[in-house]
Length: 96
Image (cartoon, rainbow, N blue to C red; front, side, top):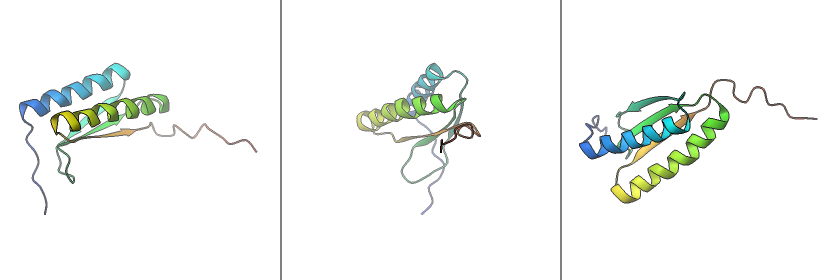
């Protein structure tokens, strides 16, 4: 059964703003896209494109902790997908 797009209520909008604000504090250069397309039980999905691999790791760790707390405290499932920049790991070579 396919779910319709979710229209966020005021509380969800506030929580989305909180997570986006935290992402911008960690990495002002990160690009953030918000999607209300239904996917399983998520209320909203945030696609975050980090400028560096290091920022991607930091964003991933901190934002997942925040959204986990939101799920437990408020009951909203905010999915966060953090993307590394293209080629972020291309410069890393294993030594023989």
